Image (cartoon, rainbow, N blue to C red; front, side, top):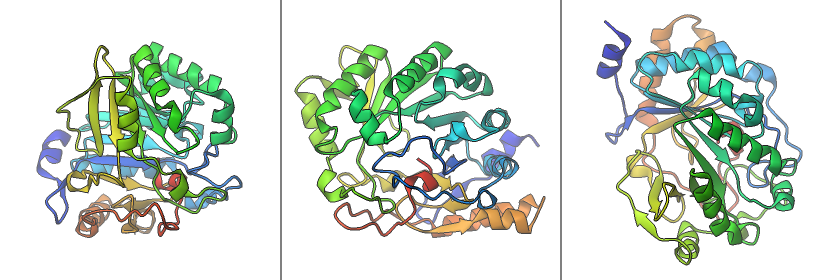
Length: 337
């Protein structure tokens, strides 16, 4: 029996009838940026022994594809700073039954790695970019170089990925007045853009999330003054609501965990950098797959049964509250961006 036949018969279904076919894997909690909404300035990263090995990550990717997962997104931290990342991506990209291998990156490494990523089998890349102002970019990322990211975007365009997209987290009084400039940049570059409401994950010093919250509805109102946004029927099973930008090939998406809950169509699970299968971004429902792998070396059947059972604890929805201290204390860099 071929792997595709196996995948067509084995599916991950949660207790609300949602089919899970999308896996996000964080391959590192480390990053070369320190974005203010994601990390504290002086982050304490996980000891390497607590992080999944590259071999364990591949085993998990292979096992999930055998259970019907057909899309995998590699995230971090910044995934491209992990040693051996390219070899891992090549191996995952060759898995039978996998339709899409995609990547989320801060763009810092794309200038030198874009072509190799295309060869490895990456189909699409999302680049985090919150501002086009170099000084503000440095303040928001604490360590980032805007020109390096812009060069990375150009390198990715030249490499010929199926699609490139910018992800922008919008914060009131920090970058909310740049949303039209970011969309114009996307139009000029013939790429897409998604605006993301900030998610309250982990305590972040010197940053009040309630004061900086800027909703998707506010962003769309700003954009409507300059662009004609045409609703599109595009459905990815994901959280974004998309609009086509009239007169261009670009699309703008809104990911709105606070103002427009999207949980009813959730088709995804995450593996954190330390090997926890996270059933929901906004809840702590999880199981320790690293423990399962290390306690049962080479026994993929035990691993599969653990994953299947985990679907029973996938919650119906997240419980974010932007105005309170986070009940989820793990930072986004550990969770997987």
